[in-house]
Amino acid sequence: MSLDGQIFATKIRTTDSDSLITRYYRGVWEASRHLTPAASASFAPEFSYPKLTDAWEEYFAVAGASLSPLGSYSGCDMVLLDLMKNPGTRTTKTTASLLMVARAVQHIKRTGESILLFTPSSGNKAIALRDAVARALELKLTTPDKLRIVTLTPAATLYKFRRNILTESDGLRFLNPILVYPGPDAGDVKRIGKAFAEAAAANTSERVWYSLDIANYKVADACRAFYEHEFGDVRSGHRLLHAHAVSSAYGLLGYQHGINTMSALGISHPQPGYLLIQHLATSDMVRHYLKEKTGAEPQLNWKLNNAEDIYEQRDSLHFPQATWSVQENLEPTFYTHNPPTAPEMTSLISKHGGSAVVVSLLECLQRYGTVRHHFNRSDRPLPADPRQLAEWSLVMGLTGVLNSVDRGLARGFEGVILHGSGMYFAEPGQTPDRSQVTEVRSPEDIAKAVL
Image 1 (cartoon, rainbow, N blue to C red):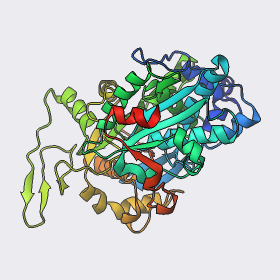
Image 2: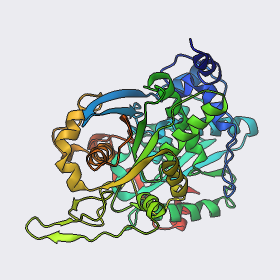
Image 3: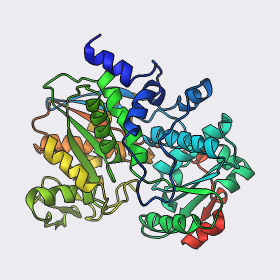
Image 4: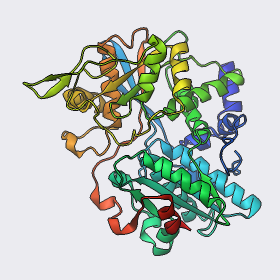
């Protein structure tokens, strides 16, 4: 074993478990060491985790990962970093949610206080936290009176939720409600949710944990870098581009935190570049990067092609060349406007290389056959009929990669690692019905449903 390998095994890797958390439990502690909850947060448990036992290892078991080759495109080798192994969530948010609930349980055991975990979300964070709480209750790591989870999501993304003990038990459903917001602007769930959380902190004996602080996710996403270091192609001088379909780029920022954590321990890991992929409805991170790069907001001269009833532009290679709508909401998972993470991500791209690109539904459909061909090489095959997809983030991601290669935006990189966000199919039988959710429109509505 090389010196780096010895240091890695000693400082980062804990066991040979298939779970990212259990395998890199030492790394989780190291990644947590210099993080503190956001100063604005009224409450957040400290970054302290339970001692690994059989029960905790079973709880963490669903935080799996794999690196699946997707083949080559125009001489660029592509690999999927698959963090969607948990069948109860199918999202990368599983790892962070398991660690957050573990921290909550530690706080409860240390203080005796009860915690109300609250998150507004487009869907993925919400279902992952609900799954983590359900797992903790099923394994008797805590009790329903001490820990509960309340989620607020746009009504349009209810299809992502899955039935579990929190929906099927009347008592647990009452304590752990699924709240949905029917308003026209999905991003309002954050505004309404934050107002509720601030008011609730003074009106309940429970500790209210408003869980959107990026530090909660950076720790978990650092495990992406640990996993790549152990199992990926990390040859010196072999430049990789890490691509991700994003709303706020928590995953890529957490991955960089993992690289920084290893560097602080003397573990050398090649620094990749980054490729941000977004859609037209929320392209703020791409626009921030381009404005910092050029000094001006990107100006697009969309022209209607009457023969095909589509809009086209050739002013920027970073935006769709064709779309049915110039404000298209391709994937409601990505709903954040003006994310505070944009400057940090722009800085990383400027420093380490990479780019940013926006894709349209039309481009995704035009590329679908090619995208499906590449994903069928992995253990994430796509359906022949794209109408069966209930989330487009994977297709968006690979479409953005292919467009970037074709347009010369990925020059200087020998390969691409695509971070998978989530993969859902339309499965009505597994989705909670409307009688199991509560519709809310204001902070006061949330308070009535929760307190």
